[in-house]
Image 1 (spheres, one colour):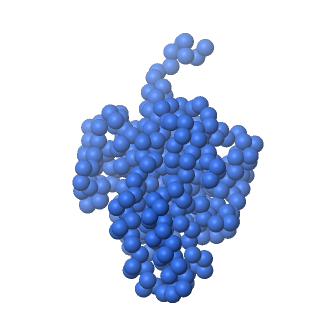
Image 2 (tube, helix red, strand yellow; image 1 turned 120 degrees about the vertical axis):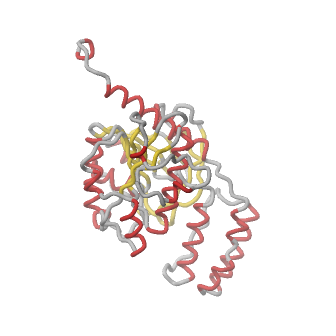
Image 3 (tube, rainbow, N blue to C red; image 1 turned 135 degrees about the vertical axis):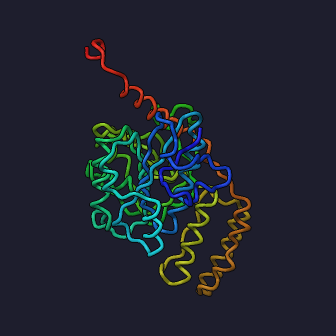
Length: 345
């Protein structure tokens, strides 16, 4: 079943994507039983299009015969370049439009942290409006990475902790609880992580969250809690990532080091490259530290490294998102059934 894209502009990249399941603008379809999902994309300009593609592809893989309609929203308080503001203006609706509707589900992306204190982020007030709206107007809300840290802070006062080094790589996870979202998910799975902060299992347990997956190397990954009408599904990791996403982030961070924007050379992603690639990257790091200059980034072997990367987490990610879509569908049917005498007793 095709995923229907909400933007009416036919030049959105998802419409022209090879192998796309997009069937055209959502307003042109006669399907009335779609699961309506909002994507609140808070990623920086460089990640706007990749994030759309990653989540579209994951939803497409998970949907099966379910009909999905994807609506794009963005916060106008997120700092952007002129290009980013123009792109958002063309293809996204604003948060005020979101607050006037009800959706079956939403997905709220993370963002690169700019401040030590979350409530000082420029989009904090808009973010709070979104999640307060979501708990009353959705069946379920998915938050990832920094959006997770914002949600648990606002709802339950759970603080994040700064990590001594960036948590980046593909980490072995263990399924720790029975839950409808975990049906068919293997006991051992892999999920990518990329973050500078974390929330901890003990704090989550004290405030009523149920941890579904966790890792010795990356801590808690997926956890859930019901807030009013919405089941909040939180991922500290990124099940939507493509095989080469971490490679791109690693190269970006190396570029920042070479340009003098960051003083520390970035950590190599764990569990991601094979041994031969790791050896090659150690050699590159040694040269970068000894001859620190921006021009060196041109010799970073990104194309060669990309050839051997595999998406080892896709199957588990697809299963989790499939379960999420089935949950939305079942709750949608339940809400649409007329009340009977028996249902009130």
